[in-house]
Amino acid sequence: MMIRSFSRPLRRFSRATGRLLGRFGKSRSGVAATEFALMVPAMVMVWVGMVVATDALTADKKVTLLTRTLADMTTQMQAVSQADMDSIFQATEAVLWPQPAERIGMRVTSFDIDGSGKVFVDWSVVPTNSALRGDFTALARCSTSNLVPVGLRTARTSIVHAEVNMRYQASVATQVVDELFKGAASGGEMPLGDRLFMRSRQANKVQFNPAPAGPCPGFVN
Picture (tube, rainbow, N blue to C red):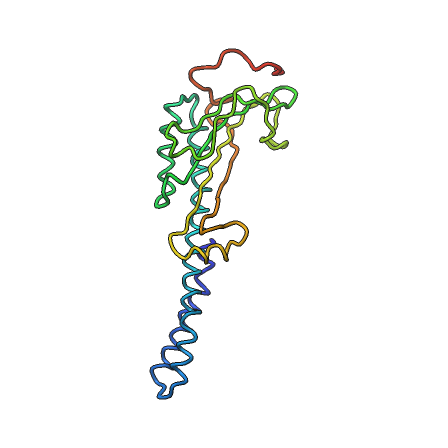
């Protein structure tokens, strides 16, 4: 949807460029040449800006798609192990292509909500491959968390939380990126991220293998 919104100004830009080139070809004076010389830098900057903005927006959409794919694949399992999650991490990483994999970080956490509505970490996993881990670390089991929104804290249920971060780096025109996304980008680099909560599709919760020993202290059934 975002990319489609660029098509209209691009068509106007193409028509204006065509008219200007036509006038330049027909003119026998130096005025058209002067106008053309003045307009070319501005037109090039507009074109570069559109290309860079489209690339950044596409990367952002891919991060959102990767997050959903990660949550969807995990919640379709009845039980997972570290090896299973590493396979899921590796498979979903392909969604970001052609963005480099070493710029992303992923984490999946399963939360249990006890009878009083308190949230506990049941299990939390990051990729064994450090290139896909980013700055994420696994959350400690049985630690309490405020990450789950109040509206999702249904007593005696479980919910999976997928998180993805990416350091987007513009390959060209880094100054243009800094100007277009002022305050968010620096040196052509901009942090992107998304997270998604999703319920288990196959059971009441997604179990982890090997199973943890005993319930969490303070957990109210």
